[in-house]
Length: 137
Image 1 (cartoon, rainbow, N blue to C red):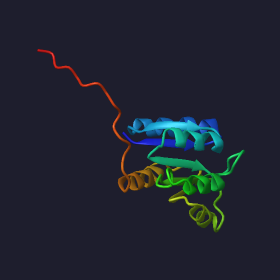
Image 2: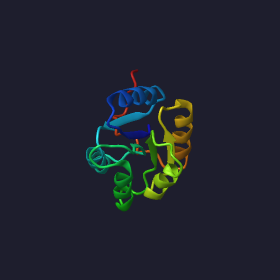
Image 3: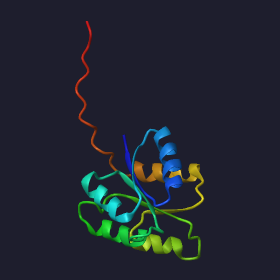
Image 4: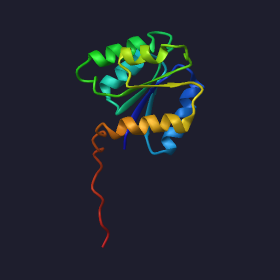
């Protein structure tokens, strides 16, 4: 099961996207600021990060640069999520190290296509260590 870390300061967005992703079978971890999100990524590396770019403590561009400068985490794909739709915003996100870019408000089918495309080119998390199933006679 793929793990996605969603770093977003708006609670309603976290709830909405988390529910949609969980319905699709993803395990979702959330953080409401970049500092917490980077710490969580280091502790329990996800398969993909959805990064809000307009975060209050440390913006998503700087958080992505820090993530991508860490050799242990740089392989994690990052999708920039932003209400910034000005000319050049996509380029700024890609220059910061994001692997893709999507705008708010979300069009969930479009976002899912981007998530699935990036996850298809990366390796999933190792399976959890579940105890073997016992077979009843």
